[in-house]
Image 1 (cartoon, rainbow, N blue to C red):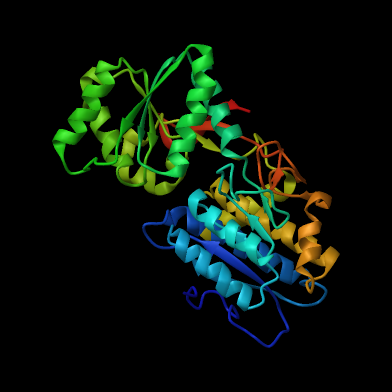
Image 2 (cartoon, rainbow, N blue to C red; image 1 turned 90 degrees about the vertical axis):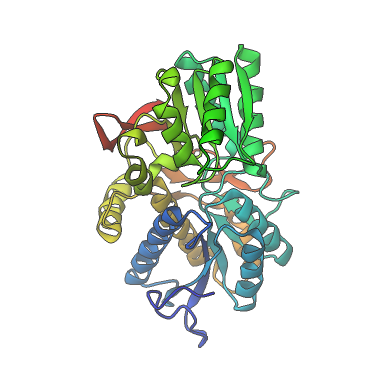
Length: 377
C-alpha cells in the first residue's frame, strides 16, 4: 500500500529519480506516532537533499510503505520495493518488524539502513547488507538497568506481554541486575484485559506481594500500558512505586494526552545527546514546524538515515547495490546527534553505529511537557 499523495512522485517509473524505499508504521496496531515522526525526519532530509541538487543531479524520491507493525507485511513490502528498483531501504521502528525486513533485504541483496529498531539479532547471521543507527537493545537496556541501580532499586517487577522483543528486554535486565544483587520478577500480561477491574487489581496485588519498588512496562502502547499506569497510580498501597517504560512509550504526545499528570515521572530510554549538533538544532526547528510539536528522537533518526544514504549514494553511485553495502565501514557523516560511523560489534549481526547517544529521561511532574535527563550512558 502506497502512502497518499503527500509523497509526490513516489511511484514515478521514468528512471530519472533515485528511489529509496521507506518502511514506517502508519496505521494500527503499529505505533502511529512513532511512524509519523520517523517519516517526517525522512521526508525533511529528502527535501534538503533535492534542494542541494539531489544525487549526481537526479532527484531522490521515496516509495513509502506502511508496515502497520506486521512482520509479514514488511517482508512483502521489501520484496515489492526490490522489484521497483529502489537503491536502498530506510526506516522501521518496531524491532520484530525490522527483523523481518532485514532478513528479507539480506536475502535479496538490498541495502537497508534501519532507523530505529534495537533488537540485537536483526538477522540470524552476520550480513553486509544491513546497518543500523539506534543502539542494540543490550546496550540501551543495560544503561537503563544501571540507572535503576544508581537510584537504589533492587526489587524490580516487569509487566510483560509475549514478544521476542519484550523477552529479550527482560533477559537483558535480569542478566545485568542479578549479579548486582537485584531481583527481576516477571508478571505475565498475556491475558490482561484493560477493561477488567479484577485484572488491574491482580497486577497491583502482585506488586504489593513482591514488595517491588519499580514496575517496568514491557507492554504495548496505548493499551495495556495506559490502563496499567492508571491502576497503579490509583492504588494507595503503591504510592511509592516507580513506574518505568524503557521502550519509550512516554516520548510521544499521545502518552501525555491519555494520562495527563500520570504521564510524568515514568523514566524511559531515548537516543539523543545532551546537546544536538548545529545541524541537529536546525533540523529540530524545521521538524517542530513540520510536526506542529516537539520532534522526538525518532524524527532525528529518520533524518540521519537519509543523510547517510545520500552520502553513500553520492560517493558510490546508485547502480551497484553491492557498492552501497560495501561502504558501511567507510561512512563518516555528521548527523543531527553526532558523527555517524558504522563498525562490527560483538554479538550484533549488522553494521552498527557504536556511538549512539543514550539517555534515561522522564516527563517533569511540574510540567509534563518538559523532559528531564536522569541518566546518560
